[in-house]
Length: 456
Image 1: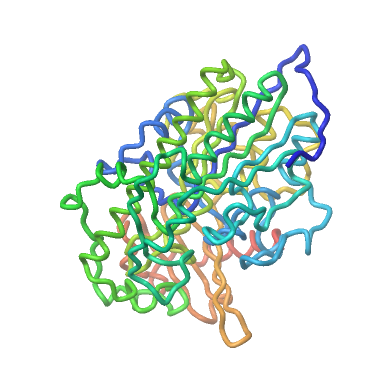
Image 2: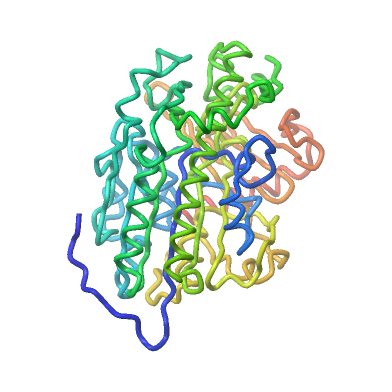
């Protein structure tokens, strides 16, 4: 759907394009970060030309709150988005989104697929909870996976398909699936706009459930090599009850069922990676690589059984931590890992900085990561703050969590409903809640409260 932006030729000083690639529900450790069963050569291509952030955290491990925060550069408390139905313009009607800022700078701003929230898969093929002012052009692909939902093997049949542990190995070709169409339509837009600056959001729907992908990707994951993550029932008592989304633990799936679901999740990642490869091939073919900044992100992480948890909606590491990579034009460091703690809020000011955009709003809650794109080991003392809300008989319980390079401290309703503290140097699996004994809690809590107060 074209909304009528004027066509502008590149000036004497070339402006950088931005290819803004989003995935849905991608677990940090399952992307380009070392899982031998899930090789991602195309995500690796992005990483080799830039910086991958191994400690990047979302603001809210739930689709719409996270995406609204990222695209506005404002915290969930400022946007007022804590669920999947509230639009951020209800509370901040005049906000200038990232796509709008590109438009103000003479760019063609386009979206294919899911950048803001869509009910996935229910709203595939529609605008979902989109924001029309962000874009000059919007495309809503719909593939055969929508027609195959009746063939799913579903191990959580009481849950809606968009929140079910369900899978299907499709006989269809890549290009027939929704994400295949996201790739082809994104390529078409790049071809049509190769001679003018563009901001292109390529929003893929995988690996979000249901786990439907062409069967060849299932074939690449030998099920005998897939293992369920270790879990014991006492892990459900490490933290306050509000910390847990999946109840009962593992939704009572057997170990065999968990293994089958994990394999299907892996297959969708392989499928996603192949589609990203199509985009990168097009950037190279069109000779746009030297003037295109490429950003890859997921809206949040994804639990695969840690603490008996699945999906998202926690502030444990598995859900709050998300893959982020920035590469290409404007990025000096190449093929480097960054271990500094960064936030999804930082993407808006970073992209604006890299692309030299004028008029960046002064009220953004993040900070440009450009110093870390020049030197990933540069001094950096900013922590990351994530949150999640729990229903409670009309009086929601909010959990706020702060993460630095070593610790995570979480408080539920200001600590009245419980606290958590994990030392990742000693306890990377979050099995020891030391909130009652650690001497670092007070400083972390003070810092968290100060950040919250500036973002409301």
